[in-house]
Image (tube, rainbow, N blue to C red; front, top):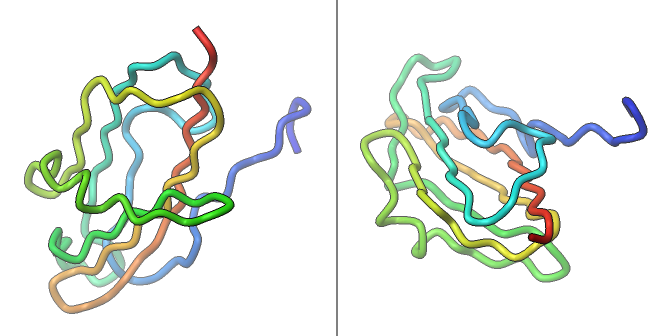
Length: 117
């Protein structure tokens, strides 16, 4: 715990697969909707590129919701680039799981906090 805030977990299950890098927004930063989300999938321990067809994104909550199909149109190369996402206020935890071209997996939780306008 730092400055009264709990640190967010960086990974749900670390593996040798692609590194999931949250470029925007920064972790633990509170934002107002709409927001831009940019996530890069870079070669991990294995050195192999991400297989974007294996990307799975789940909204984690009381009930987990697979939102992968809603995000497919925002995949650009080995990045996920969502511009002006309209999210309701609150804390949103997205669990991302991806494999590289050899099947090595990695998983990371990304948490976005959206403030009321």
